[in-house]
Length: 528
Image (tube, rainbow, N blue to C red; front, side):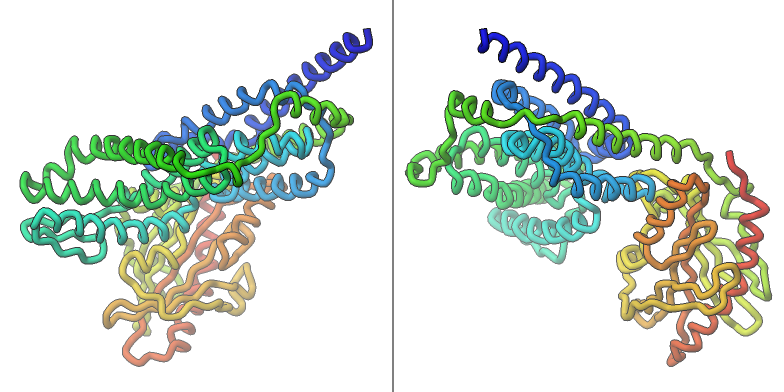
């Protein structure tokens, strides 16, 4: 009778827990819809991350396999997790409201783990760390890390690809990411860096090690082996492409083979991973085997866990998610702050400066993170020359795929070398007082230029992109609608011209431009 009553109580508690879990999951999807939608859009549009659709499916499969263990757990709230949970919720809000996908997207799997730990206890997390932790693979690597890693992988793949080509007695010269075959050249572009092999293979390595290996060192070895496998697979693809190009022409490198070969070689790398596992089976494993308790032992352990009261944790978690949801929806409801005639209609004459506008490719504007842009060259009677670029965002809030690109990245990619980078203060700038702007001295060949740049909302100016995002988040929380501007004036440095002279020229230009800009924005801006 006692056992029967206990089973009824446990069954009721289990049903109640599943009900609360479904509510929290629904609130989580609604609250973090913006970064989740961005993640799915990356899977859909970026071939390097197209495997992302499989990651949550496999996590769900692993969770389903854990259902019997979970059924026997009596949950207990982990209150020490709450400060970490609140911190990451605030961090995710900064990412969402401040348009930082590089913060809001990686926060998603971390928040899933923290909410689970807080509501259901550390014992639950220990049993679910693999299915929940595996969700990390659904997130795109931040572009700064991806760019550096991709460049390194391109260099290695190019050298190895060139070595493979030379094995066929073909004359080849590798310079950077250019493979010169004499009659033609192959460029190892970003799409061929090997990134599209690296992360899918790492994810598969983790899956294989978890399902088929029970020894710690073998699991680590299988996951680690995916890195050289990815590099070698990509180099083999480049090498085969080079050989076929040498005999059959460059069309081979751009046609059906280029896409289809990637799938074939990826499957070959996957087969190598399984072959590696079979080889590892010949090595002894008794001393380092991971001792996994049988089901009955798990049942005895989990049955002793106090059920506690997860109602408080459920209410707090639901409240945090509702807060994120309200702030996201509230901010999303703010209308775009459009400019009549667009930012491209910015005046070409003010305070003795005469300008002419320059054409910008719409694709470049989009890639720069702006909705619309202005570019012009201004001259004054003293012979001063200033090139002015302005990027404008009318919907300044909410995480998206793009944000303003910093000149610290864009200018070097165009061949300019950064000689100096510092913080500069423009004294007594109209409306903003002492303005802190980023200053760069760049050089290309014999040309040398002085660059300023800053980020600007309707009442805040900063030289730092992250501070700008914080300002945007504060505007959003206050429901204080604003635009967001990125402004970059550049002036050429004459032969042996002191930096101080160029700074004086730039400072005067900014002071004289500001009243015109504020008047222009005030008269032309409309909320749609």
